Length: 188
Figure 1: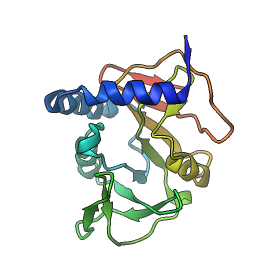
Figure 2 (figure 1 turned 90 degrees about the vertical axis):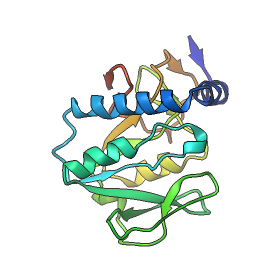
Figure 3 (figure 1 turned 30 degrees about the vertical axis):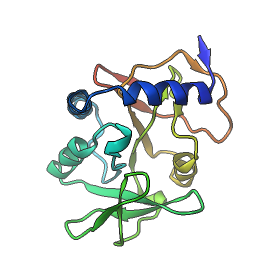
């Protein structure tokens, strides 16, 4: 069965919105634990999206703890008005402030060029069995991934299992290398 992005956004926003705070926490911990079993930890610079609690996103604080425990350098982003992301090294001195979407963003810090990033953890609503993702539809991450090196590893994290196929994939959509769900890891 195939679906279009606008249908999927509506359906999976609704499904995610129905998850209780406890379900979000349990599933987020399961995703972080499952990430530990994947060979992702030999890289130097990791991009992690900081999640919006009000949008019931995967709580990436557990992945953040894993990255910090492994002494990895972590990059976080700030949304700009032109639908682009600016990237900053996360340190103990980084001040974060929630934006209008409820996403914590760095106020300032050391800027990082996307070409330096080795691995990107990607937010998504749903994905298909070919490794394509549906995000919020603004294109922030597709533009960001286009700025990264071709060999940068792209890891989606999702509460839900894949659908068969997203029908309206276009040339700007960049497929993922892995998706980690609470139940399994998908490799593409």
